[in-house]
Length: 397
Ligand code: NAD
Image 1 (cartoon, protein in one colour):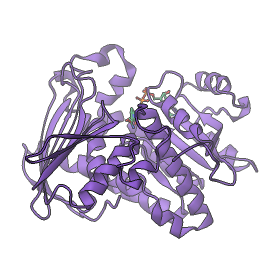
Image 2 (spheres, rainbow, N blue to C red):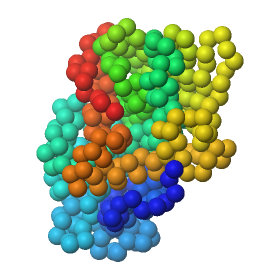
Image 3 (tube, rainbow, N blue to C red):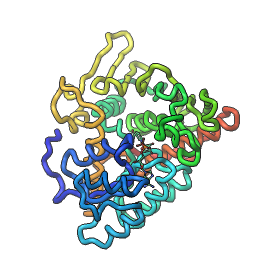
Image 4 (tube, rainbow, N blue to C red):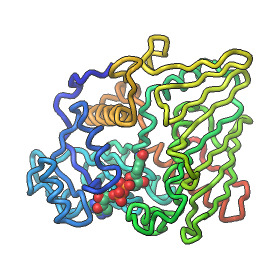
């Protein structure tokens, strides 16, 4: 159970790049990092517009001299201070992640980066090598993985409750961009610009989320090959897709699908994962994250509720209030940020035993997401052909 007790000798001194006043994702980073007192916000380069970034930082309570115009200026100046930041979160558009993460790691900082980690597998592997060389954590905010019932799903599957795993059906398919919302929304505009979004829109923006959930629930399942088809229903988005279907064959015979979409008109979020075995299936939907459906063939459906004593201890470890009271995305992110902090602290102390017990979306998860998008794009751009998936060992959540 999480109850706000301090688990580190002192909070990690923390900074942010991006996540400025009008950003979509900045506030949940701050809320999650600050929730349990494991991080203390000390510095930031919050905005592309330096004046706006400084004004925002001071409104957050930071000293004006620690609100920087650029991330490069922040990393250089903080490195000179005895009380300089130890960790930084990167909440900027995709096209900046690689350079900022690289600079942060070289400056000796632990990093939490938004997804997708970068554009190419080669870049992602370079960041992985750099984080290992610098002995720094590089976490990725696949925030839904912090929901407690994801742990219950993992444990049920590991215990054989579903039988032999046959099918994994995934989707993250919302409807918010059914029309050309980018015309008057800057945060949507960069998402459909290859220079800022990368080689894909929805595959990287939403598809990688349920993909990571499947990696947590099914750590043994490795992709053998995949086929992807992608479309731009709002034609001006081409070559980037606003809808994509991916079919996957796993080593050992199981199969999977991922539907990634921003044009599922009427859908609020539409992120689901259904794992189907030879005797039972389970299903989790991010719009009802406190419930997990367990469907045993021939028996009535069971709805497992978050926070209840019948769950596996791993699914109760992050409970904050007990069953019945709904928890949500902010708690899920807080759970992940707590694990990021514990991992950073254990890394700094060389506590390998502690690190081995911690699971969080780390740099390997970041690499895997980038690798998956790259393979999907390669398949789709060849007309939707099967492509072999190299290096199944990359991911080890
Ligand atoms: P946004 O456009 O709403 O905000 C981006 C922010 O970054 C702005 O404040 C902007 O001024 C700032 N910025 C841009 N370049 C900068 C730079 N070089 N230095 C400092 N600040 C800079 O974008 P968003 O929707 O918040 O998305 C940001 C990232 O978060 C993206 O990578 C996106 O994929 C990711 N995201 C993740 C989730 C999730 O569930 N994990 C959800 C939404 C967005």
